[in-house]
Length: 532
Image (tube, rainbow, N blue to C red; front, side, top):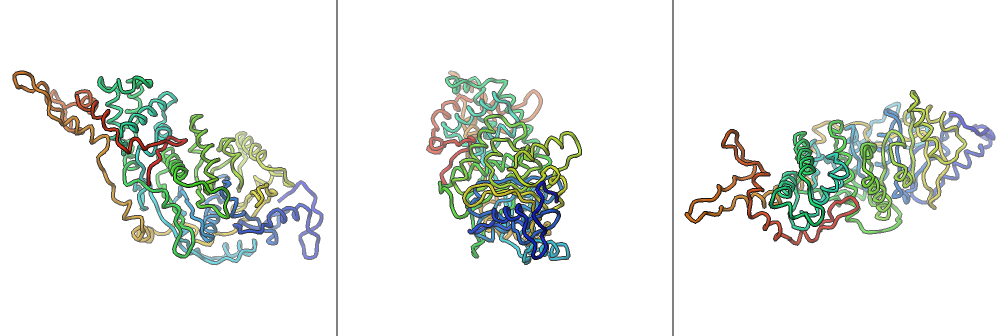
């Protein structure tokens, strides 16, 4: 490694310690519990006598793990997660690549691992950590994680459906109406039913005093929902809804449980997965009490592929992320965003992040050079030539700066990172299935439940007997049950047509007003606060 400062001596035995090295050593000499990241790199030499660490008490101040593909970000997550678990802190990991399940099993030594441990002064011992494996909507081997449409809220759903600002506002009106009338939006068919009613002749008046819902906008929303369902996304929404309090558990031996969320198809639906992670974070924000600064966080949440969350996000959405990240700190939750370059994260969010672990960057194109320059500009002043350093780091090496115990930034330190003690790779399928099968959560979440909600209330209304004329003959035929269709001249009405024909649903929707509906309040993200 090169530095812009001339060392005052060499690192050999009996030689004086260079002044910058002494300053870095002092900056990371914490008195309280801390996580060990690795050993200082200085002038191309590893200095195991200078350990680079993160105080446990500042991990609720959030962080960033960044670097080009293949530079070791995933192993850094694993290293931090297993040390947090060992200190009794629960961890949430999004497993984008499918290779974090190994955290539950002891690692394999080998020449490379033991050699790295010797270089950085690590006493490496193979160890597995208590883990819970989850899967969105049951798409994967883990315990299913679902959310209801109501609790997900309009802002996050608009992000998934890629609605514009006007359409997002209209979706907010739809949720407001459903909330106030006690029409539970459990799954996608519930939302279909309410939108269909609100553009019917009888339903239009329901929103007239608060702006109304245009047929064109409702059509866009309905088409987006239909396309979303066609992509196989129906299973993500429903009940039983996952209780995010289950992310805060510890094992009987006091270690924090590492919740690993499988994302096997993130390439197919990246926007859904990143937004679903934001729902988990927003739901935690709802339920946790204020605790201020504590000796250790209640949970550390790793948000992988973070750029997917911010791509094409509306200003309102970005504002909500910024406020949630800022405020959730006082509830004891730390958030680490994981991405390729800091420029993937908006500056207002980046400003909230206290810890930085920056792996190598590439600079092959003008865009890469611009990103490198922007990254260098986000670090405090240091004795390193950061532009040269960041392009020359090897796999498992990073530039680190964190917050000290008193909240001040530590000196920038090039670091050779420690090796994780758990298995660096996935466990086999049979072993994973056995772990999931023995999970305490499986009995609560494995079986989907479809209880009465907005769709069923609509269906019941449309199934009521029709009025008769004075001769006793039916004035109109009773509409069929929702979902029954056939073709030809005798084609039965669509869901929208059923709603239009319904003379009872308007009064039903106005009168429902259940206690559940009256108790719903919505957060910064429009997600619903629910009674546990």
